Image (cartoon, rainbow, N blue to C red; front, side, top):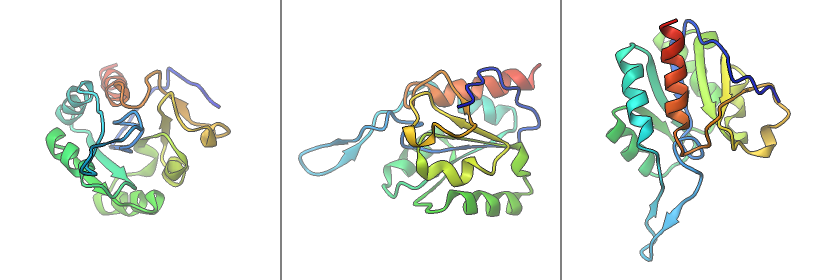
Length: 164
């Protein structure tokens, strides 16, 4: 595992973000009526706003089919695609449509379903509590755990490098 804490981000065009295990701590809460909820960090919203101010496009790309992903994205005013089976194919088509280069894309993930996208972006990044199934890959690693400001940490690093 490549645990590079000081990667330098340059020419970033797109920041892609998984939802479960990245915005959340991978827990799900179910009430007596069967409604699901998750815990997210409010820290992430300011980071995403700073990315937007720097004209860096951010998007949630999630395999989760639950509408709560869309609700959180709407609150954060960020584009969201959920129910995505093949994230690698999706990002390839998305980049082609918007004229982004994969080498200038970041993806922040945490689990095996993120592997197809992590393998093709220029900056594959994991939250610190990523699933063990990704331990043998050469990805960058954040200090933060999923759901505990990981998105904010990434945003701050991208902005910092942009201003260097």
